[in-house]
Image (tube, rainbow, N blue to C red; front, side, top):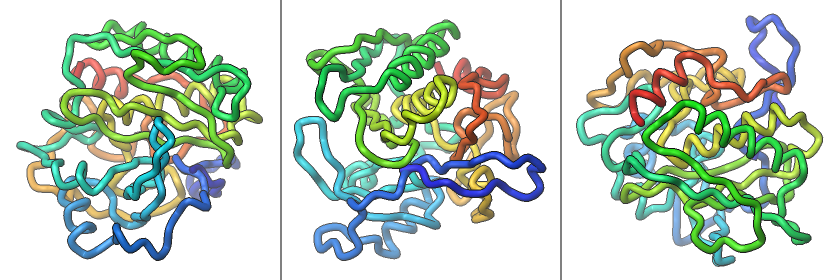
Amino acid sequence: MKKIKSILALALIALTVLSCNKEDNSVQTNQESLKVTPEVLSKISSLSLNNSDVQVIKNTNLDGTTEDAFLIEGDIVITQDQLDKMDLHGGITTEQYRTTNLVSAPRTIRVVGLSGTGTSALSTNMRNGLQAAINRYNNLGLSINFTLTFSSSTSGANIVVRRQTGSAGGVAGFPSGGNPYNSVTLYSGLDSYSTNVNAHVSAHEIGHCIGLRHTDWFSRQSCGENSNEGTAGVGAILIPGTPSGYDATSYMRACFSSSETGAFNANDITALNYLY
């Protein structure tokens, strides 16, 4: 669900910037079963998530069923039940949650990229980008590692990566119960972008699946916005060795440009090694 935005004037470079989600007709403006109430916004803010643009969407599960869910920060899907169960448990980092919102380690995470002739099958660029993203994670020697297969079957998968019609970008969610979020949706607009951009988006959405947050959640500065809410949650803490302010090259920025390399920067690597 990415939408093209112009990057901040101070960035001094004229690049196409995209948010982590596309505009989608599934956004519901008059949901009866799920509403963005002041209580919901307060809970989101208490988790140190940006509550400036929370929407209710119809989220399609892997089995084809749909459910109402909140779309937060453009590409993070959270159901009401998940939101109710989320807690900081002693604080957050600038990039990711601890305790219940991380994946139990050590473990191998099985990723399946959908293949075949259906509309959910990944394009060549998506496949190449996903492979590059998985390689980059595995090259870090973390306590979690990934296997990747391309198949029309999702049997045994921990994360299924699928294609859907829409503007460039993707959506995913946070872990629960020590398990990664089970799906990444990549939008067809990525077909016209390079393998590096596809690798960046795949790595970014997988980052959410294993518990990483947007590095600029507090301001969405990478999107040309300034919705700074401060630390919001009680006990927000910083991963040692990572910056407290805006990190202009992090792969977990809320928005990305058409010149992305797909690589992790030094701060990303520090954070990943600290957590896993």
